[in-house]
Length: 306
Image (tube, rainbow, N blue to C red; front, side, top):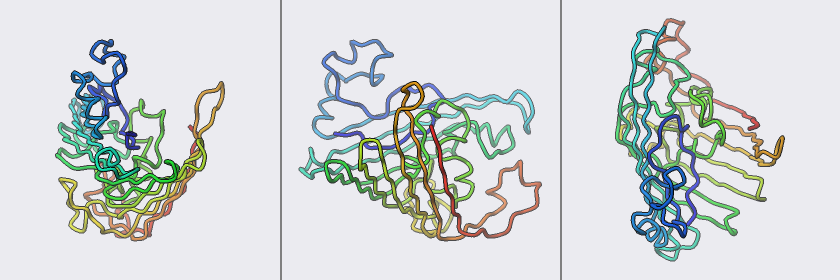
């Protein structure tokens, strides 16, 4: 069973468990040194690999962060932020004989305080990549069908766009929201678009015409919070806010010194205008003249090398 393709937010803290397990090697994971294991808790006496062979993968991850502001901002102090994640992947070919089909779901329990809102005064690039309002919420819930010997995949359901688009394999060690689904993208979309911590209903198509080229195209609901601007549990399944269209092409190749690298270019458009209220503007910017009540539909083009 292939692990569903998705990208976690930047790993800026101690991770106590790898999200999805892989089948255990010949040597029991519990016999390996801790830093050589795929998962912290090992193979559960063979039960984890047995579940994988039967078509079920279950994983738990916890990220904990501590930040302190020692000077400047609106106040000085420190915070703790934590996020627990539960993920389940089902290989429907193994379970039901449905060739090439996979179901994936994950959810978060987010807790703690925000260094950005509590002590920095609000900022466009928060230092934490797991910063979000405290909640217990569903994130992804989708069905994927692979075709043409896994050269083509179609995904439908509640999907996080930042799992596939605008990602970087090498920027996860950096602090702040500049990388991945960057603030320049989120701040031009209704409620940040279909990205952590709010996924939205959509359809995504991924093609791999060659081993080094990936072509992505998707359409998502434009407003993941819904018409009432509320989606605390991630179960609103909003179809409001027009449509967010995204497309991206990635080319993977060896770069300087034979190190792996990726060239990517993409574009996006939202068909509906967005509404800005004072509550959505960071506190540090609320002294500036208010923006227009409505914005034109967003269009964006991105290109990167990494």
